Image (tube, rainbow, N blue to C red):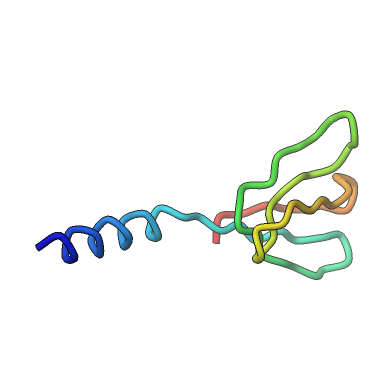
Length: 68
């Protein structure tokens, strides 16, 4: 019974994870593991990549950020 409950909780948590598709000015796209947040001091969007590492992209290069 506990195993079933743990599996159900894991499925709910994974289902809540949201990825974002970022489109750049050159037409290329990439997917992030967290919602990109604008860092005004750096003029860049900060996000976590697919490995969970913090990364950034210049705000001037971003055309669109959409939920994937």
